[in-house]
Amino acid sequence: MKRGLPILLGVVTVILIVIAWFQSGGAEAHELQAATTPDQAVRLMLSQVKAHNFDAAYARLANRDDVDKNAFIREFDGSNGSLLTYASMESFDVWGLKTNEQDATVRAKLHYSTAVGPLDDIRDLKVQHTGDTWKVLWPVSKAPKLPPQVIPVNYLRWDVISRGASDDWGVQNVDSPQVRVVSMNAIQRPDSVVLVGEVVNEDSVPAYVNVGATLLDPSGAELAQESSFDKISHILLPKQVSPYRIDFPNMRMEKIKSVRMDTKALLVPASADPVIEVNQQKLETDALGKKVLSGQLLNQSGSVVNIPHVIAAFYDSNGKVIWVSDGYMAQALLPQIPLPFAVDLPPDVAKNVQTYRVVVNHYDSTSQS
Image (tube, rainbow, N blue to C red; front, side, top):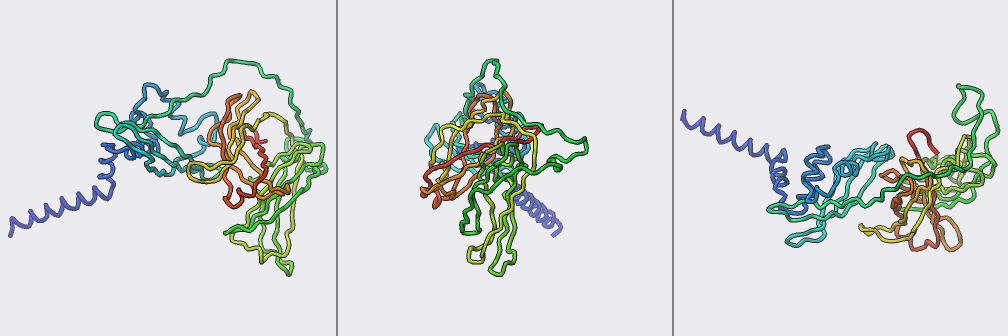
């Protein structure tokens, strides 16, 4: 009996250690270290990226001799004050697309938490069988390296002469710029009521614009109040038009009798630079089966746009705004180097779209415009 108790305690201890090892992810970690499948190779690399162990992640590349390590890190940590420099990877999903004995394609969906909300990044990664393990074949950057050049600065600019250092950012001692809501369309969505339309700056000076709305019931009482927040191009130059969108979660159209619009405008300094060209726009279905408007942005100035923000207005055959989408770009928009973008829209809306228009907000490290 005396000898049996220590043996029993030893067996129980071993069992508890094994259970704890499995519960703590030891089995999964061992399996990932082996990387015996393409999915495991991608999961291992992304796990190390998520933990900011970039040396180990870089070592998991099949073609690391061809990939610049610093460029690889910038793919996840960002650069030039881009949105990724204010983000962290929260999680990721991985699933295989096709596999043979030597090569495979694996899709990864990365989920970031950023300063402007959640951001998803979808990548189709090539994976290669090397020896007794699988490694990621990382795409080699093909971004052009432009030679030094001179770009003339001839854009329009509006400055505001203020009273003193204590003045507010929006100048209050002058008449507000004249802005007007051009159109408003109320749309019932499955989980909300959405107001979309356009607003114009009718003045000869730039304006910081925000559009709000209040929903009223049949008795005239207020049901809800919301604003366009960032689904608008806030700074409008003279005669410039911006789409806007206002979301009312958990609201039904049958409860609404009328809508009261509220447009606020402040006089602010502004410039017409940088000029951002929008090219190759097209409606298509992306890799996840979603309807998107895709295209390319081209920064024609000589300065870096740290965080580009795309806003797209979609119109039906009568020229009415039927949807507004927006999206922040994860990477900075460098001078003269195209940057792809895509913003999604509901499938039932996409089938009624006849035309569309894209505007681009731009944010830099020293100012907002």
